[in-house]
Image (cartoon, rainbow, N blue to C red; front, side, top):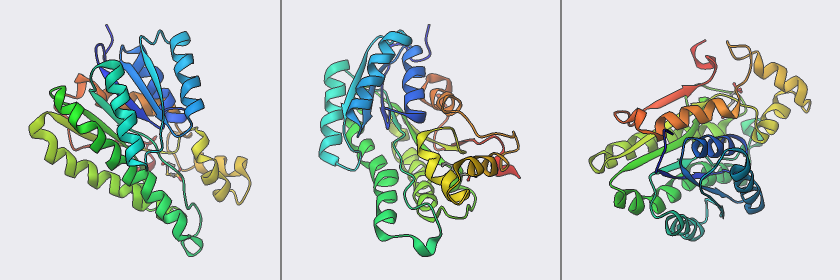
Length: 259
Ligand code: 1HS
């Protein structure tokens, strides 16, 4: 008996990193999973591997950029046409745009950070809402970051965007609770994914290995996290185990924000 038996989940940024880990975990817990990614080939590969490795009952790859409202609407409709309903939206897609000193931050990177991390979350939520309502309720999980909670040098654009995701989460939780739609966020510390390479490079002044060492030292547990460790928090929020939890933030950060 899986914790998501009979559920349909759409995961954005699902082709790699935390999204891919969540796709595997949700599928293993019985969900039908729609893997949305701007890298359509990557999403297709992930879906193929789900069938083989995790007993994925049903999975679908969707190629879409979360900043393209029409593409998101179309992809979401395809997921619902394929699986018949939608219960869970995991707004995981994000970009590490604009890492570096604030004086060097370009308007293009600032706008990209807000577009993907914040507007993308809004667009996917808007696309999913009619379907979550039709299912009689559901769970939205938004990917935020410790950068929303503490000040981290070099992350102005990313922190502003992830802070907005937390505020958006709370606003939507209040607005959608009467409809049985829960909205929560995960504030993740750094995890081993392709996305963090620019951060490690910036911190190590070009030396990724040095950046990784300096980053691990920031974490009381002595290491950065794994994608699966964040996916497990997402599973809790996606499933009925968190049925009385809405508008909150789960910080999964190896203790980074408590010191
Ligand atoms: C990229 C991820 O959301 C975490 S923000 C960076 C936190 S830290 O590792 O630099 O302390």
